[in-house]
Length: 558
Image 1 (spheres, rainbow, N blue to C red):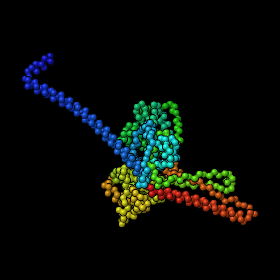
Image 2: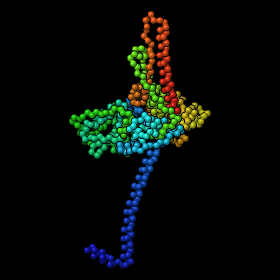
Image 3: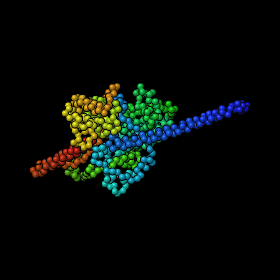
Image 4: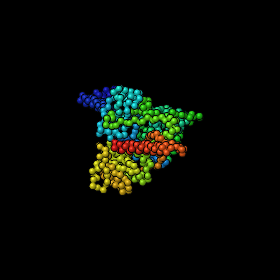
């Protein structure tokens, strides 16, 4: 019936009207088809632009990382005081929290070292930029590591290379302190109490999941063990169980509740959050949970590298102008006859203290000045900091370091990225470091010994940052950056102090002889005593001189 009505309607139209109707129909069909094609084209183009944009961002990020490696810039989480949780969290928010690279499987890691490598010699101007790197001696490297690095040929014998080590999760765990290992074992045993939870290990992290849902991530930030939960951080913001909100991070978008296990109290908080996580996901506890044990024995870095638990980045060949490491003298075996004749072994210990250790064990006045000046620096918008073994640096971008802190003896020193001639003839008594360190990136040094020095240091920072157009944040609230004192033994266990022990053989004074002995023998005993004392004093002076030379060389390179 409808067909008949449509036919009758068409017969009533004139040829011109019929032609117009047909043209309008064709135009409508073409318009619809054109819109569909345009939608598909724009969508494909947007996807292509998005991929290109991501690739460009990835390329820029890799280039920045390469430049940072060449400049020797590292950003670390620093050291938080375990006794004061509030200061700890405030300090964490000011430190740069760099995201780790996406995890790669062992096959990809091993494939990156398949071919022999050729690296250029680092020039003398670039030596200062590689001060944070370590020197790898090919002749002292195992055959497996040389094969993997591409240094297996005889032409590499005797060569040295600047390298940096990128530790995976297992490597960081094995090289961590006993306290960190104990917290890890306690956390894993707490996870093992729930039925259905599985743990998958990758290069950078441990993933705890049930089915297809990720419930926890266990990672390292520097030397700190951290755990991220699939919980809403806002629910715990006003409680003592609050953590760091990582919802903006793509890596932690499923586990945004981030907690750093820096103390036993933090570990207890994590156990409580695990209980909340179990309730939200209907996890049932096991009737008889098994107590887990782990082999976390420390391994050499070469062995970890061969096992794909650690990566080595070769920066370049060490120039011949850098002196070779002097081999340590072999320890002489002392037999019982020598011990009976009055020979003893004296152990001389030398401590290599990091910047963090020096700051922790500094006096209260230095800590107060440090906290005041640091608050003044980070109050500027966009300024962030990073801590290495010898210094603390402040940046406005990853490539632009404006100031650094170092501790010389018992004095806090401020280094600025401006020439010292800028302050010539002013009230600021700065020191020009270009005479000691050629191509110095921080040529101006200012020693802070008093309250007036603290005031001048803040004025110098204002001058440098105002020239770069950086404005201060008026809403900034000062934070207490004074770390709590810790003993030397505690800092050694935490890896902030390195100890080198030197054994010196000393001839002791023989036992008193009977009075019948001749005067000649008595004078010989006195001579032996003086000789032993001179040897011990010479050994101690040698160790002190070596320590001073190494510290001077380190400061120069920095």
